[in-house]
Length: 198
Length: 355
Image 1 (cartoon, each protein chain N blue to C red):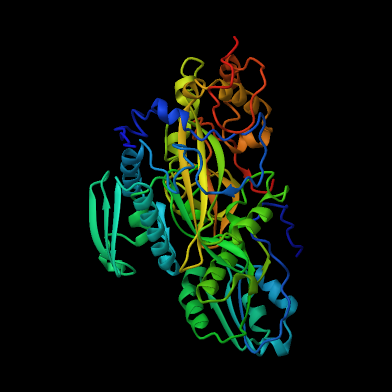
Image 2 (cartoon, rainbow over the protein chains, first blue to last red):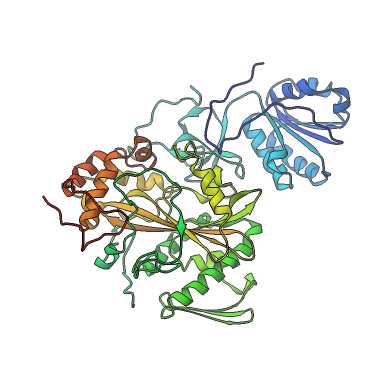
């Protein structure tokens, strides 16, 4: 599957790379949906023997393919939220030199990165690769509610119902982009929603 | 000098007003007839008598009412004041800096009595007389940064310095030009400035960061920044933009002189001794167009600056839609005469309006 080329943007917007196997005794790979393909691209028997994979399928059938790579530990969770206690527990035991790989949607990578950073790993030491949906995790700047998997701009806040436009300004701490009321100066004048990159 | 504190509001009926003295000392931000981003830093070592540069933390006639407005903003939204866990020591640095400066610069208004780590702080305008133990949070009603910045005009960003960068890891932000502390807290210098147009490409932030990383104790710096605000609203936050944004559409040729305000930020930068952080006060001054126009030099200049400002900047500063109406108003005060260099009003030397 071809990768999406994000357009150039402002400096707070995350830039994703391409995963590469790095030397290390322990490897933690956290992925959702098509992120599984990025893991399969770098998997070798030697690497997998030292790897803990945490995978959220989101309705895809990559679980069996990842399991077939024979990782040292494999976990498939029903949702990202359900996997968080496990991620925190694994990071709590992490030793110096643990390699962290995040791949899949921006929401998954951002939230898992926050866990890793909270555990003391510098964000610059964490590898990321975007795969799959280009939907965004958005914070409503007004009510502070998070709306997951936003695909259109503008969109309706899932919490307060305001019509929000999608900014590129991104907070690693919140693992979210910022949504701001689009019709504050002209109430009711809300453009037809279209895809974020259309 | 004794300051007469105004009883005024920055919301609802907007009874905010500037006295003649406040107009004359307004920090007009344009030193020439045009504007573009620059690393316009200078040392913060006083300035002309009674100017906003004279004291390290300027206290003016709006002090008491501004603090009342801040308390209201915080009651409505406590997230406007936040401090990440490693920033408490920097908060004590801020408290010490402000208390010592204010007690020295305004001995008739503030007193600080120190007996070892037992400190007594008296704030006469706000009626506060507290005794506490320095570096012991349990002896104050708020964290140290929140405690002192509830008593000090201006927003405060407290910056941690590491990895050759500055990180906005604490702040008190209730009088902001449309940015969210809750969203930006934890970002580095380039990240929190990411939405600013043009300046990154001009290398402004790289140079500014180099300057700021090298600020030394006892050698603070300052610069002015500006934007436009309809009505004297201090809390132009993104959080409340869905409530105040509509006010931008209430300008008419009849009310623009009274309603349209030039909003100026006096930004200062102080190194903090224990934490090696920086405190970055962002002090907001508001002045109605009609008050600015009482200074002939400022009338001529403001028209020229707004007329020639690049479209990206007028858009970013949020007044692109109102610019034509502003220019219709301001052009009445521009007779085409040359203006003197610098920001000061030069009332004695600049000619009155010739039309």
